[in-house]
Length: 83
Image 1 (cartoon, rainbow, N blue to C red):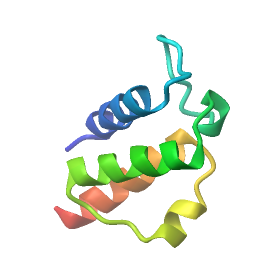
Image 2: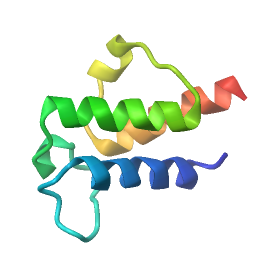
Image 3: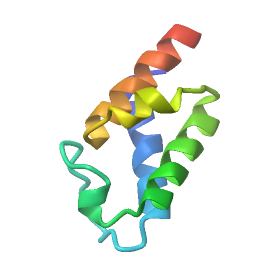
Image 4: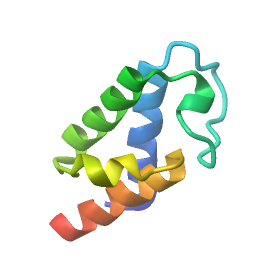
């Protein structure tokens, strides 16, 4: 699986879980909170992405993330290790 595929999964989850998100480009250098996501929205995005990728990531590692790009990179790293 390539990083772009993981990015697509994350973007799909962001669009389906964050109601206030306008149609358009997602800037991966921004956080989900910048797009109006609640903490519950963020948990749902991350959980759905992990389910889709069939991976698990400890919450302590997730808490360190600052933006969407870091989330995609972490998911990609964990997915590569599990392959």
